[in-house]
Image 1 (cartoon, rainbow, N blue to C red):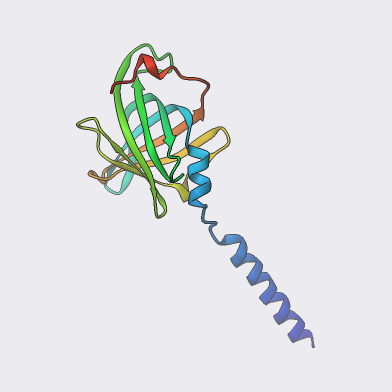
Image 2 (cartoon, rainbow, N blue to C red):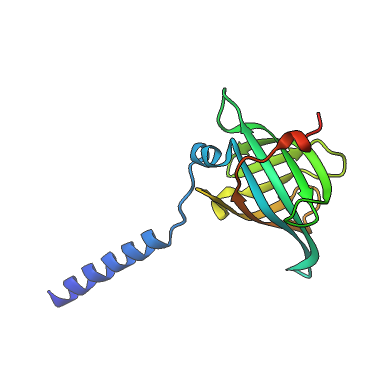
Length: 165
């Protein structure tokens, strides 16, 4: 009887461990809902992969990003991204219109500006909720680059001052 009880306890412990260690998959509709129609601002820090290790290459921009949601489908839309040299937003260093979509487990972003490569974010490895957006953005065309996202929800950003059609 003692062996059976020990076996049952061991199986229960293993079940609890396997359930607690499994990775929760995020609902793509919920991700899009938390992402869309919000202005996000903060730092985007570039890293380069060298000998299998990610290293900062001292390229850090302050960005404001807007993901406009689509009424027909909440999982894709358009938007804008503006970059500055610092958080004071005095020195604009770049701007691009963008298209975004949820595709599988990825948030994919395609920029319209020449020289801005398409990127993706594995949203299961990111935090996109309430007032924060944290994660890694990967360059589709150059696997040796990624960008660390450290964004917060911002108030009403005046896009008319920076937007280009």
